[in-house]
Image 1 (cartoon, rainbow, N blue to C red):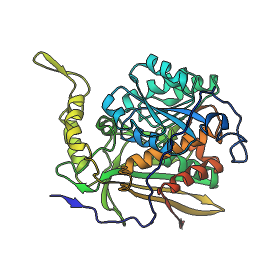
Image 2: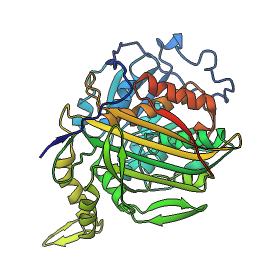
Image 3: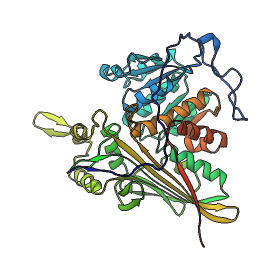
Image 4: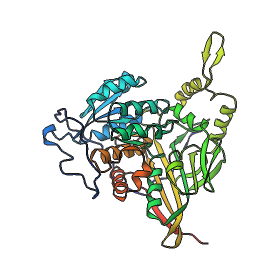
Length: 435
């Protein structure tokens, strides 16, 4: 039986469909610059009159749901000339004809093809599935271009830090909602508060209408969702990194505006374990109650195993088969509504007083533009970072997760204002803690 979530967002705002205007473009060499300390774009950073208003040529690598949202948002004004790259013609067809966007068929599994395609671009946005993410980012950097990336890849992004720094390139990683905004907020809180003692992030993207048996649909690649349920979850307790199975420590959390949701451990802290000092850190994924038990059962039965299984003359990976089968059930129909729920709590000391700061987000499908909530929250965080880098408001070379960006108050405010302008608003509360 279908159930519809009845909660409505507390904030009200008018969402407007993006309107695009075709502008002439000319090629130019990539620009370099130094850090801007006053939080304002340097003179001439935008609206270059020699290029018809276009300041930077940006390639979006990956034409999935989120990649398309990123491309359309970047093309909404005259700041960027956007090229969307993908191997699949059907994916490129979805943005073909959009003013300000051109398409290019590129095999994104081939680093050489990426390097070649990036020669005519000035910045690369990585929006590929997680298993392709690291090599895609590496190829963009090898092409000598700065990057903003959202791929949930398992490799350590700091392995590419030397490559980026050697060329003076900014490389922003995990530039989505979580990891992404969650990192941005913790970075700001660690910098702003006298000390922080605990960080908790609960986050999930969900369909509004629940269908048996899984009561879930994937706003991005089902293979990446399965990766969340397989990859061991790293947490920090008492200042030490602890590794637990994904889907562990299940609890039910009541949200005033979203109802009861289950929360379980996933490997979402990622770079925070290297860059942040908060002694207690945890991230949990949110789903409708009952979903985790289904996933545990499939995992236990071997459906998530990666090693090929020999069946007669065929060799098949159970995980690949499972992802393909679930894709049919987990793909959103055109116009089907989703929502994103996020709650971040940071405990610490400010001015000698113990307090807890809470950031809450409930975002919904945008019916005016037909844009999924998870595509909005992930994609618009990414485009805010692209604009931050393009305007040279953040110029520190090397691998840059968003907690590093959040430590700069001007950069933090810039990203938050970009999100607010698109209807993505975090409600903030501060509560004094006793003891």
